[in-house]
Image (cartoon, rainbow, N blue to C red; front, side, top):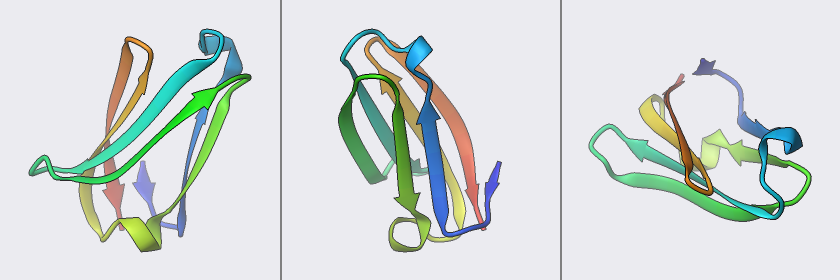
Length: 79
């Protein structure tokens, strides 16, 4: 899962989404400080491209994706 390029891509498949679901992406430092957030309505799936150079320095982060009441959390390593 290391992010080594300039772009982080987060794709949510349409089959897993309720109709017109709100999707929130939050990236936090391990200290809890939020360094990136984005909310959007997803009809037919969501694809988010995050420019790593402008938002994240090398390090370890927590990536949280919330779709309705469902929350996914992953560790994110930026090199």
